Length: 586
Image (cartoon, rainbow, N blue to C red):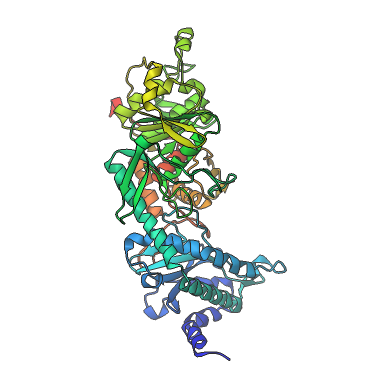
């Protein structure tokens, strides 16, 4: 027997049911009308309701109208979010809470006996352990609602005709499960996410005011479990050395202590398997705000932090290498150097010069992943090879810090030279940190810089592709093993961009690359300014319906990245050309 409550739910779906059932047996092209949400006549606007939820559909392409997004509006009162400041942690918590529910429901719709197009197929963006802007769920201020976006494939008969009955059944099922799951949200858990986010903002404000480039809270769990992003069970919690410990009272009234790393030059040293690289990896990912339970919730770093290593074989295009080389074979112009296959030392030098060009304020270097001849040249080798063409990083590190304003954190295990330049030296022993800065002076390590100051900072602009076409577009845009981006004849190996940890971030990067490389006026402004513009545009929102403005193809999900990440990618792109003015020409 149907209850009044069930009858009421069905009545709220009548509008949608009448629309979708009118498509039964028709060619799938009729679905374009379903996601027309910008009709002039309000009665024709395809926005529907179920309980306290509103929902509508968004298309992803003309050729496959059955592949769309189901957008569900969740009012702020419905989810208990009384401040817009809580929008990011709340939207991320919604994904975290709904993902297992929707994943289990999706399994019920799998039928191996049917053609894939005959089934309703849907998915929600997976949570990634970080609180940031995501296309899968976000807050729209005009609607005063959170918008949950799910990919949704309308089931087809014989691959061409709409199966409206199955489509309606699936949408109703999704809405019922979303409604029930939201009604059972653990409010204390949600408040924990919101509180964690507010505390992270407080710590970042403290870092800026007190000139810290990184912070590692006491009790943090830094090691990861078997190569995953999950915290290692039974790992030793981090504890700050006493004289590096800072105390922070957050805006929410919490008292948090931990190791504060001052701006400047910091060396992390120790024996093998002591935890020094683990600490550096945690600092690298401190650009993100981690979710409760990650173990690195309060491991935070300067937002522009970038790890730079040697990358044998990467392309280098029009980079000024004079700060790090006296000469290269063949009397090559070092001020405008290009190569299709860089050596380890050339690639690492280019990485640092490029990092300066996009405003990086903190670089992270691991000795084990660096070019030895670029990193050091001791006193004996300077005498044996007095005419060495490479200017080692030791000769530039203080200049980068004092003149350029860049902080450097290095992991060093095999050479003592960098200890002479360090403002802070942290010794890791069995994942325990000790401050040994004062002890270093007793070893009498000399500084060996013998090099005149360099010219830093260049203009850099992308040369647009020569074409007679009115519009530029790519026939093919794919990612390969989450390590390579390919856009027709352009390709970039981004293996070294280790902060791009998820497929969704890669999707965002791809979208930014598409927009930048098809800009016929790409050279009208500095490259970094163009990338800031296209990053903001990709991560922005459309007007009234709050659609995530990605412009990407298909049913991909997107997560927030930095313009710096896009800069690093395009500088590794084979097929591009840049123009620039060196500082003496500016």
